[in-house]
Image (cartoon, rainbow, N blue to C red; front, side):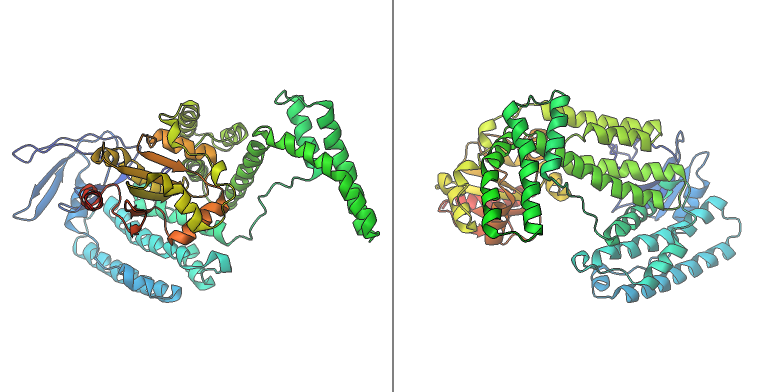
Length: 518
């Protein structure tokens, strides 16, 4: 429930079709066995041993074990297979989707009641599981509709739609929470939707002259920086002169007088600007405040919902995990201390603190082949997307370029990174360049992912351009989704705007070799 990822376990099957597999579970847990072949959806409990027998010819499946009764009932009396096709759902309005879901839920419930009447000795575990399987299968589908509304236009799901969700699914959660994957997914989307529709908060940090003076005085007091007297005077005078300019503007003073005071500000601002540019102290401070503001909003949403302490702490841990994954670097110390106050469960704490430690180590790790990280300064004056792109690929004329447009915040992008080393091995010693353009990502997150996945190499080139320049390139290239892969031939022509992804090794090999042979 914390990571929202499937945990997959594999084992070998011998010549007689036998296998043994052991895997850890925290408590009664939803499992999906041999999906796509045997395809069993069931549950397992900690400390139990189950024997599973499958006869494909006779289409027989059964379990043995001390607690195998409910598992056998689930494979013998499966739920009615009725659902809304993905493409069909896309064409529906939200209310039509709701009505269709209610209809399917009714059909499934009637089918279940029929089974229970015909087999009155079915266990309470079977009854509880199948009832909630129907409930939260519907709930998950309904809350996925949060992605059908346009947040930019402040659209919301209809009141009747959410009233049904609130009354039918939100109360009386499934126990334990891990019993059904759909319950975990439902709660993720439910809290996410509330965050979507709340009036946008202002997470920005207001850096007034007074606030700048306060921040840098605090840095100086804590020994993070040693302010010179000139810098102290500049910060103080910046506040005084800016207050005076504000007074003159408010009183509608003569414009020449305002201009005169503004001119006096220029050397002061220059000194302050040099102070700000000297290190990353202010940037790090602002990023920390932004992270705290965002976290407080999400945590307040979780606190506003009616739920027990265990579920509340799980959801908060889930959010902290998301922050770590999205940032791909350690959280500010103040946020970690806040987490410890919010979540008392030691197992949850240990997990988040281990993730924090992992990213701290990653941040201190050096990058192999640092020369593959390209500086932005030579491109600073170029604003046109096509000119930028041409300037970037200019040194690689005569080579095939495999372009990856990605972002540190993008889950699918990071999933593809695990295949990057294998892709590079395919073309070792060949005239192939792997060009990575990173979208809207902090410098630290960018470097951490490069280190984690070993993306730097002799054949790799990495850019993390300022947002405006990256936007210009993406507009020129026609990038609409992430990750985007393209192939550029030896002459610098874009020949494939939907190039094979890194895991499609055969397709990628064929596509690149065709260009190498030209």
